[in-house]
Image (cartoon, rainbow, N blue to C red; front, side, top):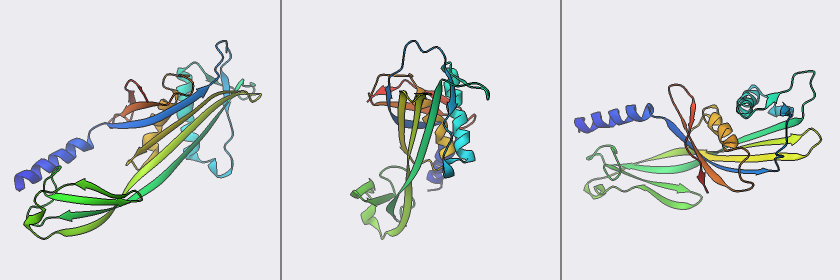
Length: 223
């Protein structure tokens, strides 16, 4: 058992240093003009409670991606040709989980060994792990709450007179609690393959390096 404990500890250490892959569902609609020369823009002013330091930080992320595509933010005395809007949301979906430990076999070290658990959500019964040794002794049941975070980012680009040019929605569900950790990947996903095929949903997988917090892209998948 001591040997198994050492293996489990090593596995946790390895996983904590691994990169995180953010899987996003992206749908973009565009009426992008091929002859658009002036790509100067300004951000739409956030309204009321949306005007936070967090919101403005994410505007910087959007600005960085636009800069890669040849856009530039209009100076204070310059009239922009485009207006960029941004909205984001995070919804916490808690799931009640009952975990059972076999006191004779010890804690769970991998799929099918030493622990099994059931998850109850609004979709009903869902098995997580199956323990072939559950008949060997009494079980200790512990209730836990696991969280899944559903995030949505929407970015729009319109002309100053209101003509709609680009409207993209990025959706992601993960167990990563911190939105600032995920948002760089969501913003980059919004502009991957810009302007893209009109109205075709696709999947974009981006990897976050835990050491540098930078985002590396993998080829987008058609969905």
